[in-house]
Image (cartoon, rainbow, N blue to C red; front, side, top):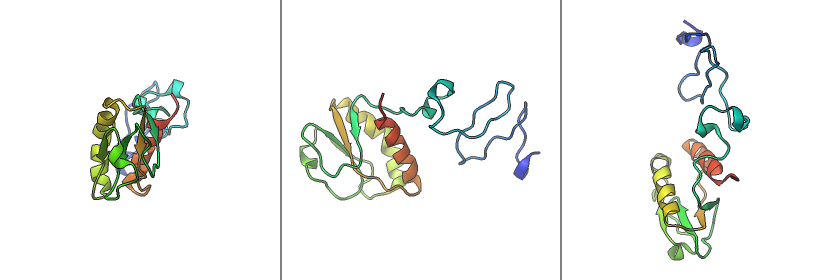
Length: 146
């Protein structure tokens, strides 16, 4: 047994407990420390570790407080922003402002808005606390230069 009662894996190393981020396997089968998006994309083992991932064809405009002509809208919460009625298409991650519901809808809504063919998707602000931190991380990756 390793630290905190967790079992050691063949080849050494203890995987991080659930909820503490990803880990990478060493060639000998052990585990390396948890990784983040700052690691060079060339040495990554999974697409989710890349700085530009989850990326739609449309450009994302984050923390939008109004919709520009020709844009689609990825909304969050009950407040309607200026220009929302004129959006190419609008979907709300959670009308109630529920971050669990927002996370569950994230990928399907982003794909559906992208399929509508706008050049840009305006994304309303999503709170950065709790699960909102993960949602904002995915938004940043989707908006990253490609």
